[in-house]
Amino acid sequence: MHPVLQTRIAVVGAGEIGAGFAYALLMSDFNVEIIFVDRIPARAVETALDLQQAMIFSHPHEIRAGTFADLGRADLIVIAGPAFREGQKVALVEAETLALLQDVGREASHANSGMLMLVGAAPNDLLTYAAWKFSGLPRHQVFGTGTMEMSATLRYLLGRHFRVDPRSVHVYVLGGDNGEVPIWSSATIAGMSVTEACKSHGCPPSVLKALFREAQDRVRLAAARRNGHFSAGAALAWLASSVLRNENHIFAVSTVLHNEYGMTDSAFSVPAVIGEKGIDRILRVEVSDEELPDLLASGFRTQEAVRKVGLMEQHPAPVNELC
Image 1 (cartoon, helix red, strand yellow):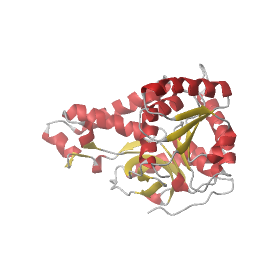
Image 2 (cartoon, rainbow, N blue to C red; image 1 turned 90 degrees about the vertical axis):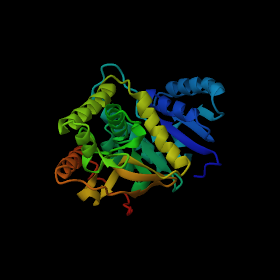
Image 3 (cartoon, one colour; image 1 turned 120 degrees about the vertical axis):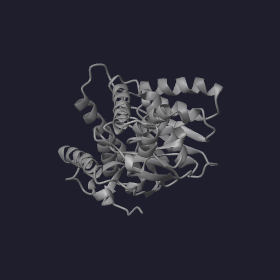
Image 4 (cartoon, rainbow, N blue to C red; image 1 turned 30 degrees about the vertical axis):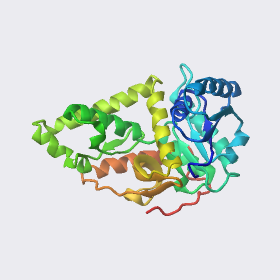
């Protein structure tokens, strides 16, 4: 994908997250065609019409409703998931999204070989693994938002605590699906270790733990109330931007692992370089002896979830090596 050419983006799921992603992209100057695909066609039409009206206040894009047949011709498929309905149980949402991914994978199998799939639905690690399995695409072309929101929230809280711009704070939250692990051993503020910065400010290590708990509470509360679509949409748009402009930004994204961080047949968030071909490479940040067991436990939980829904028994998708 080259930024001067029109890129076709199919958004699967015309609910709040899909609309939030498209709106964030709408405010940019990308030359894209956005196609909404939803199992309820009327919802895709309504969302597309709403964004068409908003387009007069932004940059010109082509926005329309489409069908699953459009997926095979897309350059980027964004899985925003089905819209949540009042009183719907989490297990039913997960089953519905897995069935949706099967349909997406069926169409993606006829796609151009360079197609990318970006998963924004939850549980993100399980669904990222499922998208890879169902699509048959190489693993570097399928990735999820993972712990991006958690990492961003923690950076914001640390910046507020130390009274610095959050963009000067660098910390990764790895793992995922209710097993997030803040990697304090490599966290920095303007090059200074976060733990050392904490000591110099006279705050005990318990402060860092409390800030991470607050980050978890914020992200999970937003998910439980179904009102985190702005941050979720922004995370998807940020990833799409790195792809469309080949920016090679580093994000903690959910990806299928093949011996990285000691884990295989699983997916969880690790730092990765994101460019026009998807995951350019996975970075191996230093993880302390105290952090590694929690990280592996997170991977095993996803592995068990993958096994529970029967994905391991299916014909394996191709595995490519990532540096």
